[in-house]
Image 1 (cartoon, rainbow, N blue to C red):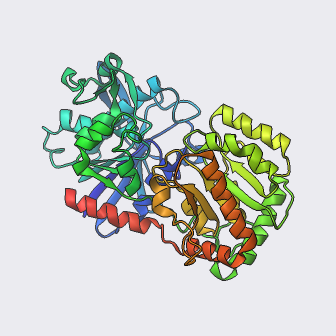
Image 2 (image 1 turned 45 degrees about the vertical axis):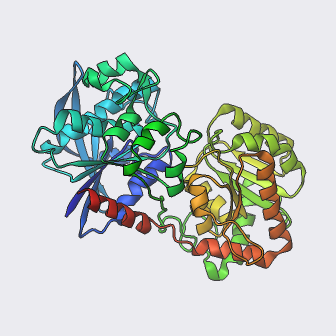
Image 3 (image 1 turned 60 degrees about the vertical axis):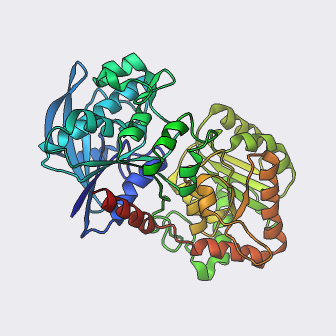
Length: 480
């Protein structure tokens, strides 16, 4: 049986700030249990739920050398859905009311976390075949393994995979400071190793030293090789293209199931899709304080409120979209203050057409997936995207820009042969986005049967974690 350890900075059900936690907490459940022993290790944050922390079992503790420092490491464990979770405890590094604070604190604490994970393995008598690391926070694991541990027989046969969930976040900081923090040899802080543009770069180190690198969609794996999508690392990624794989993320079909979802007012399936959607739409509008009009296209947005998610386009077109009198917009998320303020301003100007929920609520997200007619994702770039997968599961039609995982998962509607699962636009352009929204409204308003067909085809798509797990299993088998 192959042993796989997911190394991550967050994972549901214990701590979540974004889609990374959904992947690291959901995917392990879908591997063949008779062939793979998949476990997860994350930090034990002070901001975790108190009830969850009370259920943790103390395994052991020790001290780890980090540069010139000697730091305490506690290892605790718990089980969730049959998966073993380990937690690295250190009250100095993992204090505070949120998992991430500022880049200086984070580069030190995740260097500590990476080294603590490797030091814990022999003490736990647990020898993984593969360390599956996620994003820059764990990208030093392959570096430390190769540079500091491979001489030890315990570690010699371990392989590493680094999954890049968003290349924009790289863990960059002052070269000399990082050299001091990590205690890594001076020879590693040069342009062919961890140095990039005068800074130390954790993600670059992980790309170079990992045995395989994956991204969360096939198109994003191609996008990051380009100057436009490579975030300054396209050169190093091109050099390591031979080990780069794009594996599409999935969703948990048990959590996102309109037939059984406890967070929506009315459960429904494909057989009563139209009636069920209508009940949920009216309930959502009532909850949001918006009037119901059967001619309005209710468009949801569930995402971080940032430029990456296309809010520059939203800002440019908001006046036209809301004054047009055909589009109601319901937004859920938090993010950049300038866009939050923009949303609140237009909510004040058009109280019957826009509701901006500047917060995050899993329950409200489910209500939007079930109650909206369409879901808008005009992303500047999108490694995978999960909201469009969730929306289709509920028969809500995605309107997306053709980038990254959005291009891989949404099939453009074709009126000639009645195919497709959503509406798409290619260029990052506000007018192109507007046209896609209006195209969707025209079909919704004038061609109801075609609209219902798009809804049903979306529900029929299989974006379950089972498919993703099979692809990762193939990669694990090739490496080990």
